[in-house]
Image (cartoon, rainbow, N blue to C red; front, side, top):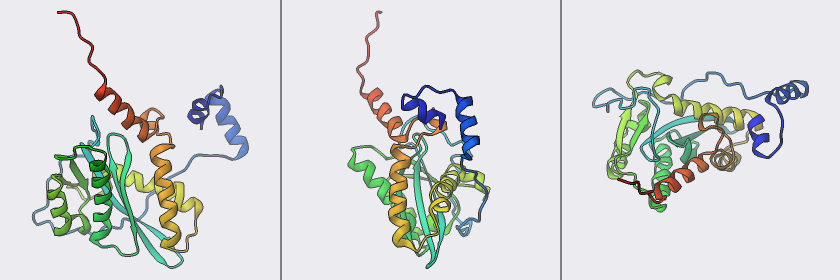
Length: 235
């Protein structure tokens, strides 16, 4: 809240913002632990864990993380798949479905792939990290990674820490949208609301881990630096 006010040119101390929030009953989102949706696949031929819980990147399209979460609605479960770029925290792909099949995860992956390629970005050699869910271990999904020249990485421990950044995104999505604006009727209202939330998350939401900037700003600044002319130095 303080960062957003300062960003809008309002001179106010952090302590005053905290006092006003307390007096008005305003508090930040509190997240907890919830059941996971992925069913572990057999261990045969599982890719290595290339991340080892180190979710860092020095540029876009070096490391993506993917996961699936669920939304309870009056007409049944709606499943939502996200793909996140670790460098900027940008959601590059997402998809909703009433069925927990491989195509759900694959559609989110393809959205991210085509969005990046359409923008003229090179994604070859990108590390794609996920948990051991059957959706991500399916032959069709593995083939899509190979065709895009992605390198598959799968958590080795089988707990949430192995895919912590994707799990954190799911939690934010639940607490900032699903729990806040529900109850939901079904996929017909979850899907457009998710689209709006993703746009807000990428373009307007300030991220503490990004020095209170947005994912879009982080990627734009990176592109500007990449294309900035190099200053010659005297020998």
